Image 1: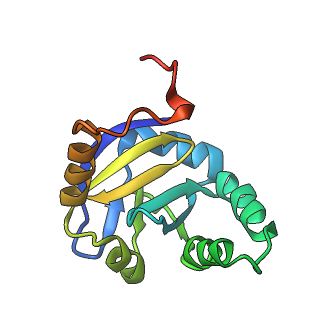
Image 2: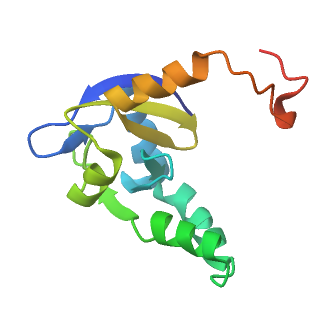
Length: 148
């Protein structure tokens, strides 16, 4: 279970050092084999390979005749990269994925349960600002009655 946020820096070779608190779990659960892909929100999604495989299978099973589905298949499956953590717990973020997410040197890794999101720090700060700003749209029906 991955949770919390960690501010990190990409090194000069565009590698991301996975925080030590997650490394053991990633090596144990997937041998350090990870999938990194694009998310429609312009961040990157990072999955342990065994978690990713049923997602890819399910997304691939939907009809490609629906243009919305086909667009998502192209974005998410088409940009998926298999990466392996090195012995220091680093993964390489490919140039196309860095460009897609607008990643600069300073990034934020966000634990989301079974996966991570990787954001450029400035874009993450904007996401937090939007999430905490008062919205005059009410609560989505899925959250009615939900309390923290």
